[in-house]
Image 1: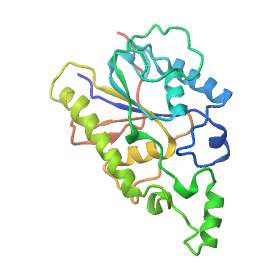
Image 2 (image 1 turned 180 degrees about the vertical axis):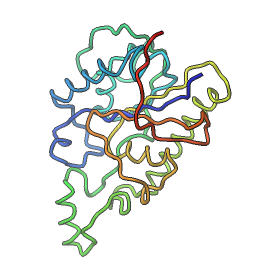
Image 3 (image 1 turned 90 degrees about the vertical axis):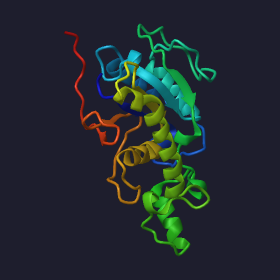
Length: 242
């Protein structure tokens, strides 16, 4: 059995992601271009001979925000079971894929609660902090957001989700089970970057700085087929039928 993977997908482009405004609880739609790019990602990366193989997915976690849910819809995995939300746009052509994984909405992967910094850009935040006699060199990984979440808050909920993924879906595969073990997570920029750091056992304050573009896809897995050796998969090969 192949080593299971976790695919992380950031929602597609929105008006606020275009201009750098921090978007936590504000629920705004994808732009037209954002939808087109996510559809293209689905065509390129989803399929039996692609990066994300629908029939190998054991479970799917999606943020409660509509922009993430619409992104998931546009990937067009060919779900066997109905979505746990009313569709947020026009349906796509039926996919030729068949994905039996259930879709779960979880607050654990919603975007960082930016609190007082919701809807404003990093330069404005730094100027605001300067006026408040706070360190203007604001770093979300270290400082968090006043009125919102701290790095410790984020770590707590992400560690809970990571434990759920490993215990429920991937440890059984590592132990020799023949069930699917891949997991898909569709969410947001900061929370998914934090997820990758916690996956690799790094603190948010000390971990490397990862980037994930709007509509981007990342892959996490394990070294040596060992549940105790989580790793970032920097590059993966396509599956080619023999």
